[in-house]
Image (cartoon, one colour):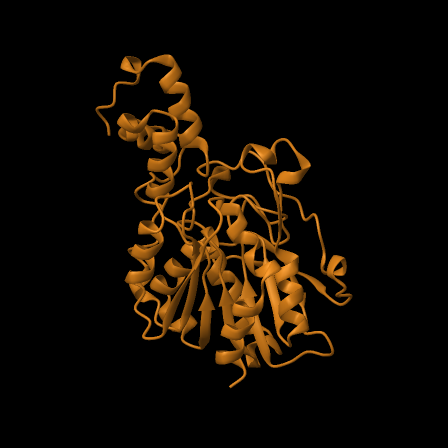
Length: 315
């Protein structure tokens, strides 16, 4: 990678390389908190904040179960470049440069609290209302695992939350981060009953697919070089697979089977296969090629999500 001669690359290719390298490595815009639980008929929630493992301030909601707090807690996070409320692609620029649809994670939260679960959902660093860190760089899990540690430390120190039965709902970048957090501090997560981990992804799959779309698949080393120049990890380093074997609790993973952003089903299947859990299930979303449709799936079709948590949390 040190031998890359950028001057030898045609200007149009170089601009495409730099643009692709910047996607996910830097966070030029944040997704705002565009919805609250009240938008789904849930009137009670609490604004919280707590530190990541390295001290970055993280913003969160605690939403107790409708009808009264129960002893079941789900700790939830989100993908890049979203927030705990979702994504505002329907608002136009700059968000529609990624995708032009709305993602509504508050709908997921509403389904869960109406089914008897308490939910703690937080913004990752450099996202939503949480603090800035690492020069604004997104590690697609490689920095954000510290936020997963911080959330769990906060729960374990809380006088009520610490006594609850705990599960994880860790999405995409948040799922990658959760894998690494478990790898680095397995004892911290020994009491986790189960984990829902939708849309975990290797950036190599996304980078390779996008490079082919833009006609720069012969310049993958140059893309990695630009990623390093920006101060981030290379696309090969932003990969949850090395950490997946540390995951041993029951897991429910889902992916968009014909996701045009990746070479699914290969990438999703390889991640799933690395998970060590004796009890694990993969669900493939079919009928769409849009990755972002996957993020909305359980907001619109909560049955499998609720059945998974019910099976492990309410037995």
